[in-house]
Image 1 (tube, rainbow, N blue to C red):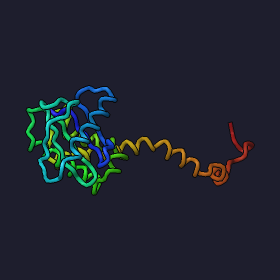
Image 2: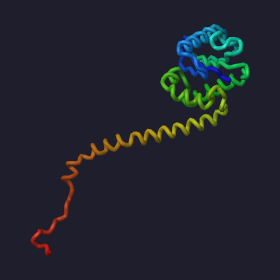
Image 3: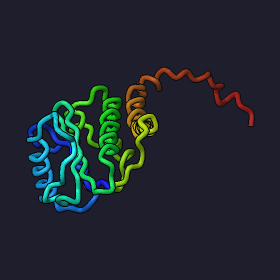
Image 4: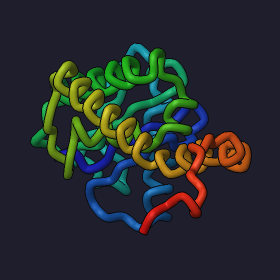
Length: 190
């Protein structure tokens, strides 16, 4: 089971955290700090697996990570998870982010955290891996984007109606109305 997913930059600033077990907020910050110190001091040519830190479970848990450009993607898992399977999951997550944001960067994670978490939820929910097929994940993301666009259209409809009424110039429209000539009242028979 996956206990936590952490994404932080080269300076240890958390860009996204998702814990699948409850930890108080101060403990979460300590876990990110400890994980950063464990992962960042390792050289690039060493294995991407290491024992979990003392705060996240010690030797019963593993930290599996990948370092891309300025970001570390770290999954803290228990012994039942396959290290290579989690490395593949990290790769799928990063490639999906890359396709969704077109060359994902640290700023995308900061300014679009809701979309990043949605993508992550398509991959992992409750600490269990749901989907690893990137085309399936991208299909779900496209469906979500369509729904968001539809909702934006519905939500914007009242504002568009108000602006259309303002642009109508109603006093001029009333003046421009052509009424037919009415017969005088004296010529009508009752």
